[in-house]
Image: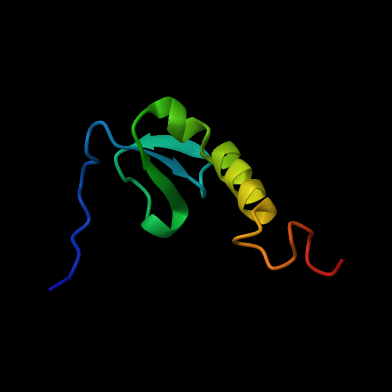
Length: 75
């Protein structure tokens, strides 16, 4: 018996961005390792990669999370 059952149909109102297909999907259609989300709207899911890039830049520049004081490693 499987611990987790895959839903045959995604839950309406949950939006994900599939990294494998580069597409927005409603409800979890692809496996968890291949998707980002859930997002509240289709629009938010469509901008998932941009949001992740912006957050990564913010974290890299935040001295609380970066021992290099915002500089890339190796500098």
